[in-house]
Each structure stands twice: as structure tokens, then as C-alpha cells.
Image (cartoon, rainbow over all chains, first blue to last red; front, side, top):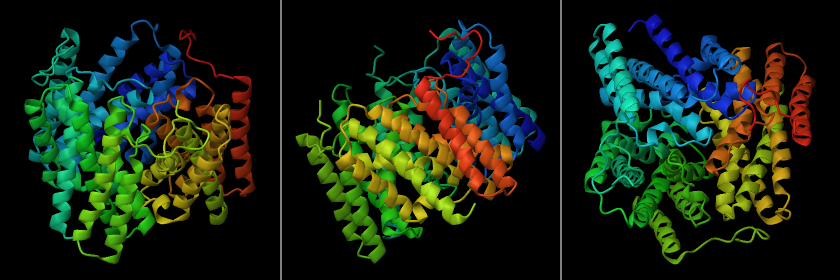
Amino acid sequence: MSDTLLLILDLAGIAVFAATGALVGVRKELDLFGVMVLALITGLGGGVLRDVLIGAVPPAALDDWRYLVVPAATAVLVFYFHPTIGRMEKQIMVLDAIGLSLFCVTGAVKADDAGLNILAASVLGLLTGVGGGMMRDVAAGRVPVIFRGELYATPAFAGALMASVIAHENYASAWYGLAAAVCLVWRLAALARGWTAPIAPGADRG
Amino acid sequence: MSDTLLLILDLAGIAVFAATGALVGVRKELDLFGVMVLALITGLGGGVLRDVLIGAVPPAALDDWRYLVVPAATAVLVFYFHPTIGRMEKQIMVLDAIGLSLFCVTGAVKADDAGLNILAASVLGLLTGVGGGMMRDVAAGRVPVIFRGELYATPAFAGALMASVIAHENYASAWYGLAAAVCLVWRLAALARGWTAPIAPGADRG
Amino acid sequence: MSDTLLLILDLAGIAVFAATGALVGVRKELDLFGVMVLALITGLGGGVLRDVLIGAVPPAALDDWRYLVVPAATAVLVFYFHPTIGRMEKQIMVLDAIGLSLFCVTGAVKADDAGLNILAASVLGLLTGVGGGMMRDVAAGRVPVIFRGELYATPAFAGALMASVIAHENYASAWYGLAAAVCLVWRLAALARGWTAPIAPGADRG
């Protein structure tokens, strides 16, 4: 994938994740800086985790001012122009799905660039995708989306695995769009239709 | 300690910790991939934390495929063959004690290999032992075992301190068995008999 | 800033943060080692996070025995000599404010020394200040102070930004006192008077 495309997708993922963090912060009635901190943690958490794990420190988030300005500006926009609060949970889930699908792809690609094998790059793509949202939810005292029994980790891992293979085999960049789309469509369909994956035999849902 | 023995103990600790994470995930009625993510976090969290802190990145967990396959396979086994749910809490605690005693030893040894002093190596052994379980509990919205007022940190630090001294003085590998056994027996006895350590004067248990 | 002054301020911040962690641990009726672990996490968490992010591993906390002895000794002192439990919450908040103001300054200075730009150094100063307390609260199952809707992140960012500018422009060390004082006085005034910052329009406090 070209560096420019990777950067744009990364910043887009950061912006939508930051927006989910900012919305949670607005709903918790935090002040502007509190909203910004939650937006920064959510937008940058997954990528920073990935960068630390592949030894790319200081992480891009601290080395390139755009990585800080994008989530901060997103937080300000959400703070002042957020729509009425009522149906926010649904918007958070949709933005979260978009961020997830972008990050599982960019995370896997960066991990592959760092020389990790396909399995490790897929796991790191998954972690990049779920890391920021998990930090957001843990910090805000919510149960992380990934552990709510919805179909969440499976689409993310599917997207990350596809992206790892594409990166490893040097396929055309356009295929990354397919990887992200698979994750996004799968996750949104699960949200819309209340799909849940099979749970362990004997562990019946209450 | 020989590298092979260290690897085997490390993988054994990862497997039992992964099993505790998988059991928590099964009880929370997560799907297979959700269970895998919780198993990976629990099994690899402590070691990854240690590797990041001593600058050994990418951590072994991402560099060696066995570190990913062991917890993933453990998660699949637990998912499909877990026993009936009822008495799971007790099993989780026993597996957790085994993982704790293995990790406080291997963590301290790896920290000593990295050149840390005995005190720092002991603290890192303790963190390696409690890190994965703490991430599991925080991610799953449970109070971490270490902060439930049971005898938990003390046995782990005792084992880690013994292992640090053994590693620093280059004693025979067999002694590591004693360090792990002290931690395990102490922790299991505390579990079985409901031992609690002295709390601060004036902070009476309610 | 001279290295000696930086070290002293860093250790002072570690001591007061460790004391807040130890007080939370005493109130949760943990044993001595559990109290120590919570004190270590709280006292060292922010600085370790900073060191990992700027690639300074092993972090100072594991390289220099004073960084381990200071929070451990603080935990022992709090454990045995803590005052009566009743009004502890207030004391925790005041100590936390002192630690916050020291860490947002030292964190920003160390980040500037590592070559980060002013914006990144300010964010890292903020994270150093809020990181340990956030880990303490998350680990202990409390809502992090920073997300309770009080004026918390704003004073910390103000102090970190001032310190970043002072460090970047090589102003006299005495000015760091002003940066820390601005954060401390602002935070204490907010505590004493129940100040809250403006929240997002439309997100009325319930």
C-alpha cells in the first residue's frame, strides 16, 4: 500500500474513533479537555499499542502533528456541534464499525511492514482495531464492545487476516478496500440484524 | 535456566492463563473469536508487558508463532470441551494460581537476563505474573483478583524474589521449581483455607 | 532543568501518587503487598507510560532503585501510619493534585528532552500526569478522576503546555515552579469550590 494511502486511511480511522470517544465523553458531561483526552485515547490507543509492540517508538501519533490535531479537532467539532444526545449510542456503534474496519487493515499492513509473519500481523491488526475502543470503554467504565457478546472480533480478524495476506503477497492496494469492506459490512449487518455468533455448547444465553 | 526449559514453562503458563481467560469468556457468552481475544490477552498480557518494559520488541508473543498458537488452541479446546459451567469459578482460580507461579518465575528470569537488578527483576516477575490476569479482569469488568483482599501478591512476589536470586547467582535450574512451588502452594493454601493477609491497622474489614 | 532537580521532582510526584494508591488500597482492605502493588502502579504508571512511548526502555522506574524504593516505602508508611479512614477521600484528592502538577511538568520536560515537538510534549506531559491515577482507578474499579466531570484535564494540560514551552525555549528552571503552581492552584480551587468546566451544549447535567 502506498504511504499516502496508508496515512489517509489511518487518519480517517483516527477521526471516526476519536468521534466515538468524544461522543462518550459528551454523554458523560465532561468538559472540553476531558472530551479531548477520551478522543485522543480512543483515536490513537490502538495505533500506539501497535507501534509500541513493533518497536516503532516514538509512535507515529507523537511524531507527526497531524496524528494529534485530527483527534483534537474532531473532539472540538463533536463538542460544539454534536447532534441531540438521544440516539447517540447508535451513531457511536456505526462510527466504531468504520474505525474498526479501517484500523484492522492499516494495523495489519504496518505489522507486515515491520516484518511480522501473517498470523502475528493479523493479531496485531485485530488489536489495532479493537485497542482504542477497548481503552475508551474501560476508561469510561463501560463493558468493552468486544466483550458484549456481539459479532465484533470475528469481522475484525477476518479483515485483518485478508489485509495481512494482501500485504504479504504484495497484491494491488485496491484489494485493501475489499478487506475493510468485508469487516465493515459484516459488522454493520450484525448490528442491524442483531446477529450473534455461536457461543460455547452448554453456555446458554440466560 | 536453559532456554528450552524457559520456553516450556512460559508456554505452560500461557496455556493455563489463556484457559482462565477463555473460561471467563465462555461464561460471558462470547463467540469463539471473542473467547480467543480474551484468552490471548490473559495468556500473553503479562509477558508482553514485561517484554515491552525491558525493550525486547517485538515481544516473543509476536515473534514466535507458538506463543500465538498455544493460547488460540487453548481457547478452542475450552470453547468446545469446557465442563459444565457451574463450578467454573473454582477451576479458574486454580489455573490462575498455576499460571501465576510459572510466570512470576519466568518473568523474573527474563528480567534478570535483560540485566535488571534483583529488586527490579522481582517486581517485573510479579508484574508478569499478575499482568495478564489483571488485564483479563479489567477488560471483562471484574475486580482484579489481586485487589480482592486475598493473599495473592505476596506469594507471587515471594516466588519472583526467589527466582531473581537464583537467576542472579546462577544456581541450578532445579531451584526454580522450588520458587514456583512456594508461590503455588502458598496461593492454593490461601484459597483453600480462606487465608487473608494482615490489613492496615484501623482499616477493619466490614 | 537540571537533572538533579528533575529527579527530585519526579520522586516527589511518585511519592504522593504512590500515597494516593496506597490509601485506595488500605480502604479496599488489601494486605501490605497488595497495597504496595497499587502504590507502584499509581506512582510509576504515568512515567513508565511516558518512557515506553519515547522509547526510553527499560524505563527509569526499573533502572534506578530509588524509583522502586520510594513508592514501596511510601506504601509501608501509609499502611502502618495512615490516619483514620473517614476523611481519606479528601486527602487522596489533594495528594493527587500535587502529583498531577509535578508529573505534568516533569513529563513534558522529559518528552522535550527526547526531541518531541511542543504539542506532543504537552500531550505526553498530560498523559504522564493522568496516567498513574487512571491506572489506579481502573485497576481498583473506580471511575477515573479525569472522567468524573470535574476540572482535571484542563489544569494538567495548561501546566504541561507551559512546561513544554519553558523546556523548548530553555528558560530558567524557576519557571517550572510557575507551571506546576498554575496546575496545582487551578485544580485545588476547582476541588474546593466545586468548579466544573463548561460541558457540551445540549448535554445538560442531569
